[in-house]
Each structure stands twice: as structure tokens, then as C-alpha cells.
Image 1 (cartoon, one colour):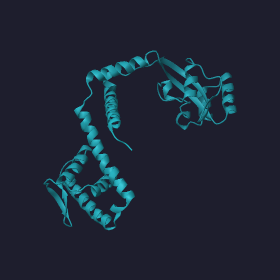
Image 2: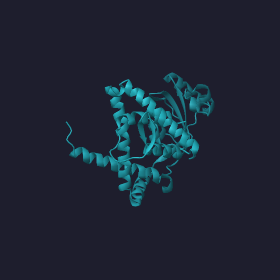
Image 3: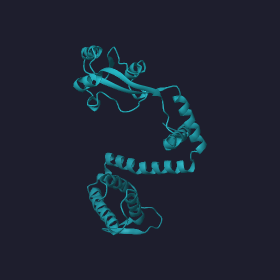
Image 4: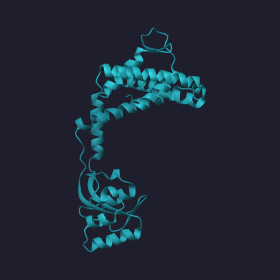
Length: 263
């Protein structure tokens, strides 16, 4: 079974694209309309990339998909849907989106990121994190400030933070874990008021005043603090390379935009 999203994109794109002038091998003909073999080849390659085994079943599915596509295309044209501006717009976005993605991929291949640039960026990011801290923290989220103050008062009487979280917190994801937030986290992962309150606490301390955010009022407790741990290069070099590639494409776009006549 072909992916329905891919079917829709292929349907829109094929409505817009006309047959190229060069000679082409015909894969199947539907009501005298030839379907080029390269279209089938692309679909087969996509399915194989998703783990579908090549063979008679895949070939039959692709053939059936292309026949159904051509039948529906004929009906769409008969209904003059390809003349409607909004449909033409969607077709243009689909087909030109494919072309743009192909250009970007080719550009990145022709202008690869040097390993030395990846290493330099890694060291820069690592240096930026030097001296920063990560936290293992808990919180209790309530709707009203008075509720948060009451929880703080109960903590002062020795009632366990985890017990109060389970009975009071509005944060469904953390309340059953005693308010525990997932793993070691940087303050940058939180909204500013939460992050500011977090960084003022030491290990074992909790906020003595409610912390207000757009989500409500928080009571925060720090379980532990450590120096920020930066992952080794081999774990992040793919992300760094992707980031640098995106920057390279953005620089190209900036150059093209400066040269372009836009009215």
C-alpha cells in the first residue's frame, strides 16, 4: 500500500509537470497516457529506503498505484480542477518544493562542511557551556498563588515534597513521580521566571516564594546540581554538520537576495 501523503504530493506534482522533451522509457500506459519509467523508479527507491523488500509484490504495488493515479488525474482534469487558482497554487508548491529540496541537497554535496569546521564549532559550543550548571529538579504546579504559598508552608513543617506533588500538582507528566522533571536539565530549557528561580537554589533547597509563569504558580526544589556535561564530539558531529550546512544555505540565500530584483 502506497503512503497516502506521498500519493497526494505525487498527484499534485504530476498535474503540473509536463513530459520532458527527451526520449523516455514508458513504464505503463493508461488510456493512451504514458507514465515514464523514471517515475516508477523513484517510487520503488522510496519504498526500498523505507525497508520494503524489492520484488514482484513491490513492483505490482507501484504499477497499481500509478494506474490508479492516472485514472484519478484524468477525472481531476475532466472536472477542470487543474484550472482552479487555489489548486494551481498547491500544485506549484508541491512541484517546486521538490525542485528546491533537490537543489539544496546538491548544493550541500557540492559544498561539504570540512571536518575542521565541525571540530571548531564543537569547541566553541563547549567553551560557551563552560562554567554553566545543570539541575535535577522537581516542581509543583498549581493554579493560584495562595495554593503555592500553602504548599511552601507545608514544606516548612516537614511534609515531603514528593507527597505534596502527587496530591497537588497540575503537571500530569511529573506529579506521579513526585514532581521530578526528566533528567539533568539546563536552565535554558525553562521559561525565564522558572530558570531564574532555579539558578538561585542550591542542592536540597526549595523556592520560598511562588514562581509565576504562564502555566500557573510553581514551587521548585533542586535535587542536585553539577557542572554542565557536554557530549563527546562523535555524538553531536552530525547535528553540528547539519547546522553548519543550514547556515551555508542561508548565506547563499542572503547573497541571492542581495542580487535579486524584488518588486
